[in-house]
Length: 121
Image (cartoon, rainbow, N blue to C red):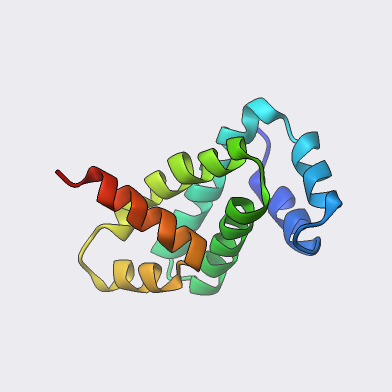
């Protein structure tokens, strides 16, 4: 299985809205994008549960950038895989969840609250 960490490092080293970012994504196996996003979510959880909030913030920045500057398939993966995976941590009523919710960047926060609204009766 491909590791997400080298891809994240490469992704963060390239300025936003760059053609290079599109090239990075096209080089990644499109069928594995959901796997890569799940690995990003898993790594974010590890950082969160270890109280490494700077690293959580970095992961959120990558997810935010993917939501803002990627095609519909990748945005869908971030929304459906990444945020859904993190919802177990975000939905709790404790200090860790409060910190994580406060670290969410605007687009991630908007998508998270959209999902919350959709789940209400």
